[in-house]
Image (cartoon, rainbow, N blue to C red; front, side, top):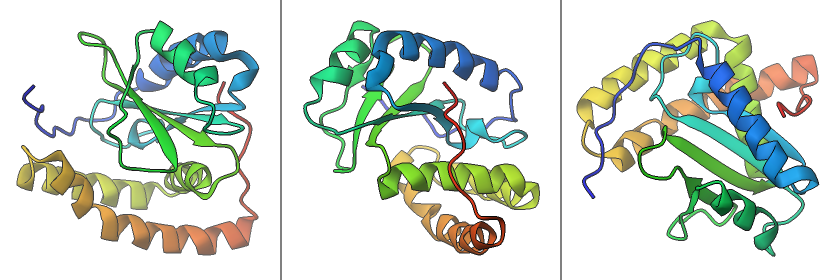
Length: 182
């Protein structure tokens, strides 16, 4: 399978509605096994241009045994990506011919789970930094159009700069993860 090129598009105001529909479907399938179901990533930040891919984070009590979330997700047509190198999550993708969706299953309360929520919340509250992130993503997409890994790796320094700012912001406002999106 030939990987699709990295393409950034203007913010789509339908992304939150698309997530809401998907979130309800996931909630129905997973029930109490999902402690949280959250819209994360760039499509979760109003006004932020992004790759047109919905990122969803499902928070669970534990990653193992995986059957409690894996079977319901597979029954919905999501494909488990066992080749995902991140040990702190289990990763699922959409079935062929369905809208691009990345599902990240993480342990509730873990650093990785909180990182995704924290980064999203900071960008939601700081549109200037969100705009700078969009500008960088357009530049990197042009440079690394056919190499998603290089594109992702090239964003790392900027993400950590944002996280430094977010840390200061969190101390000033007493940030905590808000209620789940679903």
